[in-house]
Amino acid sequence: MRNDGNLDHPRGLGGPADRSDDIPSAEQPASTSQPRLSTGWWRTRLGGLANPFAARPGRTRMAVATGAVCCLGLVGATFIGADPAGESLSPNQRAEIAQRAEADPASRGQARQPAAPVTETPTPEISPSTTMPAPKPTAKSKPKPKRIVPVAGLDQAQMDNAKTIVRTGREMGVPRHGLVIAVATAMQESTLYNYASGVLPESQDYPHQAIGWDHDSVGLFQQRPSTGWGSVRDLMKPEFATRQFLTALQAIPGWQDLPLTVAAQAVQVSAFGWLYAQHEWRATEVVNAVLS
Image (cartoon, rainbow, N blue to C red):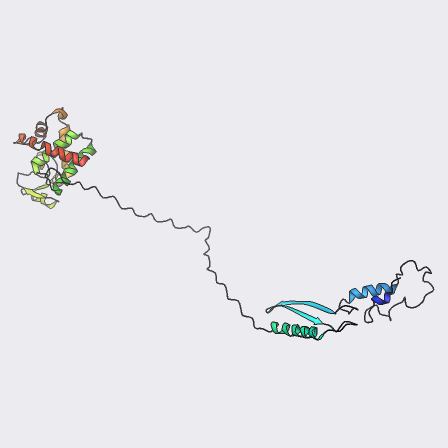
């Protein structure tokens, strides 16, 4: 039979003054083979639970209470009790306990450095109704027209006018033979310069490269406004003058099979119609250079 008195503490809730099993009673069972479950025994057990910080024989009395969190962090308090019954601490142990006790309040009393504030770049809020601006299209520079090197003894101004004749004829669908006829005719009539007329001062108000005095003849093909070729303003434009010549050329039956001189003279009705043929080889070289 275990002695319950060894489990009780004089200061516990179930001390000797409260025990009922210390008083002999006639009602207690005579047999001692069963454990004695007296009221005092349960008080002794419950007393231990009710007072967990009570000192117990053979153990050091210690309690740690976790403190509340404050601006200085987590605070803990440690309580060191008296020497356990029947045991004594060595000087080294007492010095270590005292040193730990001094370190705790010292660490709690240290000044805390505030944490550096974290700055965040605010992200602009985009409303569902907000329309994002469309990216601006990048301006693409237009390709510069290819500059054709003059051939057949021409200068750049003459070569540019020949190029205008060839490209205008290509837009009209005129075959190569008709382009050679047109360039050769312009070589004979104006040496491939855009002429104004001294007889028509109005023609000099428009871009021109030379001035002639052959009646009212103007432009690359020396066409006369008085004979129905068009207005002075229009005939001073190389593109318009070329269209007028090629339109008249295509109106001649079988012009594709005619010699260059005959075809050109049928359009121009010149007093020196046989002179167009001398420019055929140079006109062919120019047309090939433009179309290459």
